[in-house]
Length: 276
Image (tube, rainbow, N blue to C red; front, side):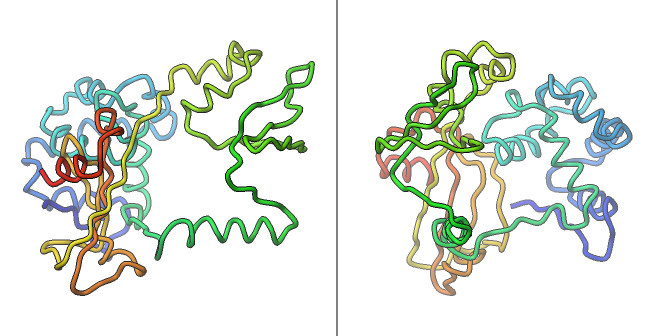
């Protein structure tokens, strides 16, 4: 393990600068200096500079700024996979700079939060309860099947997989991008706003849970970043999450990505690959 420790006694961005300077396991001093010089335009240019980097991948931006490749290998492979589940040669540098700005501008920007229990109970049910308390209705097992349009191209209604037709004042679709592309009406596909979806590609991700019969050593109450070709982030949930807390046994939750080659594999094959 290698870690960045952000001291509580220092404000941002001094705590972040201190964390980077104190870590001598990942980067040498010459690499830190060249990395800092390369980041200066982002720190001085603000949001306008960040937005202008959207056309460059992380790897392209690093090369342009004269930052050593080892900085990408040691730091930004893990950061890219944690943010978007893809590698630095595919990820827009804008995403990285947005995250870095948060680390540098907010004292607690590096902190990670965990739900204190399972998402259906601790995240979804409070949302359902709130909707129902306001007179709304939540239908399960009724995915969106078709978007019905008016003659002017606006939404007339939604047809659901259970056969119901829903009409409303406003419509929101929350779906994976690949599914949204299939649902998009033909009349919308050439509209510039929706044409941008052509560039978006979904990233297959597998979430792996492994229960152990003993406590793992060297685990932390934090999200851990991986530079593995297969893993993105992981955590010992028996330490980080109240519902899974156990002083004697560990439960690892791992994000397995990119998972194109593994999405159809059996559980045993995925576990074997993870443990390797």
